[in-house]
Length: 313
Ligand SMILES: Nc1ncnc2c1ncn2[C@@H]1O[C@H](COP(=O)(O)OP(=O)(O)OP(=O)(O)O)[C@@H](O)[C@H]1O
Ligand SMILES: [Mg+2]
Image (cartoon, rainbow, N blue to C red; front, side, top):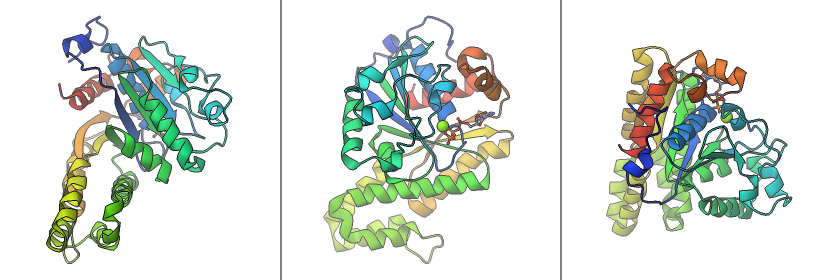
């Protein structure tokens, strides 16, 4: 396990190749731990020596700053959207953690759902231009197109879910929505839209599953079929089950992986779980980052495992 308090510079040890990586943290439902995960993964990475920017894209309901122990930053994304500031760099606010800055989301009602296509494209390209090893995007709840697009644009899409039916259902809904959006965005696949819809809604074997769908499309148009196959294979969302209390809760992640494969043909990568732990609300109450306030909590080793899975080390 990583000793988060040591000065070991893992970044150097790992020969990081310098390519910036964007991770998006989403999930269909509110209150499932997206901000907690964003904040603490950001902290893990910055303690490893990476330069990290955490961005609160929960426009309208921004609270990532609280999980990172900083007061509401003076300048937020709404200042950028309303052109009060000209660059994203002007929004960078330092945190108590070395190497980690935050860009705060809008506090007013400049909701992400209202973001125009051009604004979204501009923000995304400016995010890519930030001087950081990792950019972590904390997404809002729900499945608006803009939230889906931020998720899709990331190099890694991470989903958090609670081990309860409503959250699990919302996670499937989110995955299906991302998947639909991804396929719809591939313009040349548009003409097989109805077939895709049919396969995505398949719950029982008498409807086409995505694998059967690919076979069908390959039969009709081999080139299109292979494109579809590549789209499906390249979409590997990561899953974190949060607030687990029992082994059965932990196992939900494995069941979801099997179900995603069977019904949607999607490879869900179950990267780990986070235990339910009172230190979370204690740290939120104190407005201090969990990993810094309670370095010995069970959650620290949970995060350690997840970050190692994501970095494949
Ligand atoms: N592992 C955990 N153990 C105990 N409490 C937790 C845990 N994870 C999250 N919580 C509690 O759940 C609340 C919601 O977490 P968080 O704000 O990270 O969720 P969110 O998905 O970002 O919510 P929103 O959609 O409102 O932005 C937190 O205030 C925290 O107290
Ligand atoms: Mg949040």
